[in-house]
Length: 206
Ligand SMILES: CC(C)(COP(=O)(O)OP(=O)(O)OC[C@H]1O[C@@H](n2cnc3c(N)ncnc32)[C@H](O)[C@@H]1OP(=O)(O)O)[C@@H](O)C(=O)NCCC(=O)NCCS
Image 1 (spheres, rainbow, N blue to C red):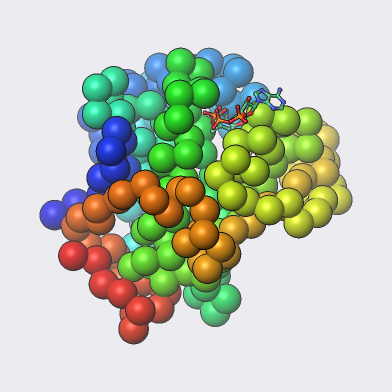
Image 2 (image 1 turned 90 degrees about the vertical axis):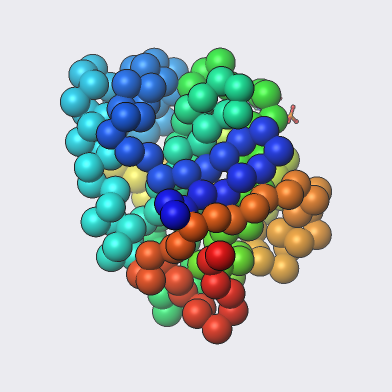
């Protein structure tokens, strides 16, 4: 069974080629990709190319990107864990949604579901997140989800020909359990690729 996390209104699952038109539509909005080094998508082929890269990244333990599917509205965006460190049991979470889905509660639920996977069967101890220092919405969204601001990474991110300062945020496994997000139920289905299990003794995917 394909990997997925099922919550009250959203399911996180591995994207496939059939999701390319929806991803293209959502990420062809320049407001959505404004803070990213990629996008906005100009052609559907870019979404296909993105989806084709994911299986290798999952198998190698490099990155886990999941499609966020609203139970009524269908695909609404992506949440993923990257920069995974096996030695340190940590990764960085990043999320984007189509603009219609900002401020709807999808962000908090998706963070709860991804944290359940990360701190459960993946066995991570820490989830970090980056923000552009001018992206107040993203900062407020992370704070609202229980992340703490740790500081500024100076000239961390190359965006076009500019070298940008970046905010570093994090939530620890034990902190997640104390946030309201921990009360959001999430059922994990399917099997994690072995490369994405960082503490095999601490949990197994169903
Ligand atoms: C970042 C993103 C995933 C957050 O999801 P969201 O649904 O918009 O976030 P939420 O509604 O949970 O939280 C946003 C908070 O920012 C506040 N906010 C909105 N605009 C703001 C601004 N310009 N400055 C500061 N706070 C702002 C909102 O009031 C809300 O706070 P509240 O929950 O206390 O009311 C979504 O906006 C998105 O996809 N943005 C484009 C991609 C992106 O920037 N990703 C993050 C990269 S670091």
